[in-house]
Length: 109
Length: 109
DNA sequence: TGTATATATCGTAAAAATACGATAAAAGGA
DNA sequence: TCCTTTTATCGTATTTTTACGATATATACA
Image (cartoon, rainbow over all chains, first blue to last red; front, side, top):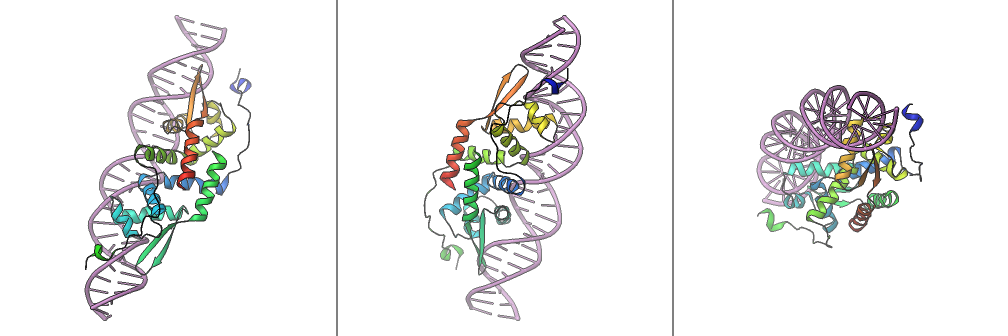
């Protein structure tokens, strides 16, 4: 008797309205924030909106180049926004995308 | 003139009540779900609660050993629970931890 | 007791992430 | 214009993650 004859996959009890590019975007956000340093950056931006890269470099135990790299990951995930101000760059959470993120988490989990 | 003399770190506009082991746990959850295969597993468990490992192996484009490894990551992050039933293992979301996860996301973001 | 089934774990190769120093780029001030 | 400041990017070493086949483990069944 083959496996497929007996196997009972539980019925889908519901549907989940996420897939494709939207799902990829959400997973990228989870991945971005699923790193201790990047989570710490997000925390710092919640409590210090508009701070510049140097503030984060001071706050974190890693080199400037690495902070910059992490900021890039968060930017590309759409979680934060950088604004060039003179020689500095000011960072904030990307409120609109964060709101979307929160909605999706609530929707799915 | 030194940097510290002029630098103006923006005031903390608020506090964020997460740190230490709790923060580590949350980051681990984000990391676990921040992988396309593992997110797909979570989705499948939402729609097919109580399914067994083999169901996931059938549903995913990767080897059984790899699925098992991903399930372990999700288990260790506290996102899912496995129940041994005969030779099979039935998986479900860990509802209590998922609820905590959702609360924390809402609280922070 | 032997065999089949289901899953977890082991060992390992390949790919990706993380970190750093060095350097480029871009703006401001002397 | 030259120097300083700030940040991003490049090149690269190291670590971690991801994937696989092979194998161990544990239950069920004949």
